[in-house]
Length: 328
Image (cartoon, rainbow, N blue to C red; front, top):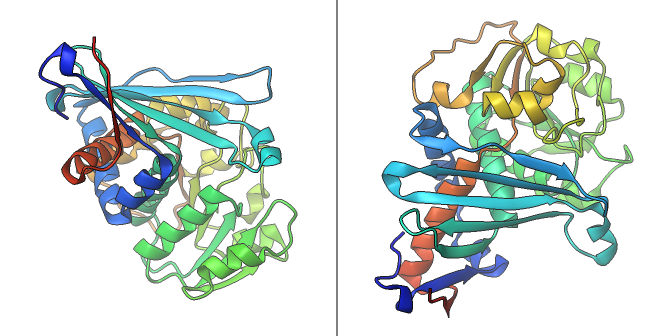
């Protein structure tokens, strides 16, 4: 990111959702998210305290921010969840990313963050599966059929070619033709007739719901299962049954965030390992056949920033986006 040469000539780049979608590619996002994990492991990238607060409108507003001083990377994502957006025909998850020049504090680039949040979270989940799930896994159970569930399943099928069979559990417990159509050419997919039975039969469980409570019974989770947990991202949210973390080997993206807003908030003293420490080679991990593993995903600001930096650079190289005079 190169700031303007003088205050009078400063420009602000705007990237809307269509431009973001045109510039994003799953492989590039996967590489950027891996970089974010490794930067975090080495503490070369900093993650600042998260803001996550309920609103009187019924929404939840949050800010995730951080920097990589050696790369001149600084910024934040303002995001949250507004459930009434569905009544307006819009997406309830909303996010906007701002990249800032660390030398001057001036904004460089404003980016629609919805697609970035979706894809970087999918990529993080995929990296978790690669590191933690049994490589011969063939059967997966996913809770949720929304935007995040779709991207989690997409990356799972992309990165674990052994997967053959998928059970899903939607909000009403019934079938979802649109969800099935997205994946029918890549796997056998069907609604779960019984959620506990589906969990018990699966090698991998992904939870991508609003986090309203435990989604299945503790006894359903069998030895050898890996769980990616996406929905607990705010105080009071949970998707796992009580007692599961005590039985599992727990992995998190950020230890402090997980204890504050993730599944780990319900058992904050549970020993855990940050996934970046596996990706960086700092901490070895060997899965025993009977291990239950959990990846508690709360989302790193650094993931948003490394992907945003990629888009900023690509937009400048291709002339994409709207540039506004922004003198100071």
